[in-house]
Length: 551
Image (cartoon, rainbow, N blue to C red; front, side):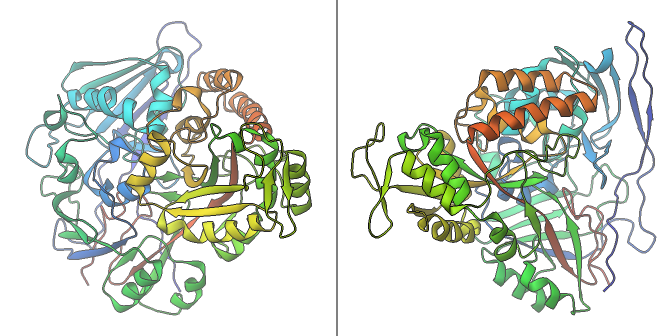
């Protein structure tokens, strides 16, 4: 079957200049070319209705206050970032039509696109950008808060179409952090003076994106319509997008085959070869998702719990998990065993050859014995002289997970039972999961898809930085703290040279692997499926911006 190339919605020219001079000099400028319009597609509108299957009710539709994949999947079509990222991860203009980097990477000046309006007709200005960062992203978006936050000195708005980010030292990864996934811009006029996490606008959002909100029926569907005043000339083509909440993946595939939906975000491995025979269905493959890119399925340990304070117990659990079984039996080959805390999708920062615990039940049993967890005749382990735990207490741990991750829990429960550990599975919807894990910290273990993004400062730092322990969803779930690691992260974000940054990230990974606050299970990849005549998709972010379902 023919596999169609991804559609790039914006083409840009990027010129780069470097100067050793002490005076400020531009490092990068970006100027957009005209937005291409496919010759076979309508100029604007007339593209029909796209029905999309999503796997969970998002709870709200504000992607600026969370990194939850459920929320981003349901909402990114309604918003924009200052920049986008093309299929190669390179920054391209979006709400910002150009930018200049000065002071060797410490000052970024963005010229905003004129004439952009919010879906309610209000003019978009630099004040919206400043407000979004200072009052929302830097407080509530885990990846932006943990990375940009500590490095930023100020955000200035000299006029309505200019935004200047000033950093305390050179800051390398900013342009990778400004797309709709990492930094969606929200309207100041609707959020100022409110608690952004509780503002009712989150349930009836107003953005600048290609599609505008129509309705949201919890656990049923979300309806969007074409933004007739969209800033990208000739886009979007679709008249309407309907996101249907279908929790079961199998039911999504049945709906795709029956023509009840036109797009599914994930085609399971067992279904891929069968669907490949259907001439009405096409695939797109990617490591990028609405919640982020380069995602690593990761087990978190609550380091506040007495049982899990012991490194030997954490290492034993890591040894007890057969990660290749996850690739084979859950992902069906759509992924790979994680070799390090940083995804191999960021090759310059990825550190192969680390002493990550391999699958070894005997090593797990030896570690548990040494930690005071004695195996009874039936194999169940109980405490004997374990600090903070009463003698005779069973080795039993809660395991929190999204309902869509239930198969991970079932497999891990079997694997850990083989070494005498009981795993109690607790499926929770994303909003409840986030509150339970990050606000209440009421868990022993869990599994999270930690998306690393295109740079470790974006999606990795939040997992380990001491300052990221707290109520922000999908930040430092383990409660891990090491001042030396915090210092290394500071050094890495100020280092412009990629090779030098990579060496620092290797030191970080060596330290955290030795401490084992997490188990890095698998790097996931995704296969999107869609029905003809729908076409013109890209596999990420505003995936339907240039799509059409017209025959």
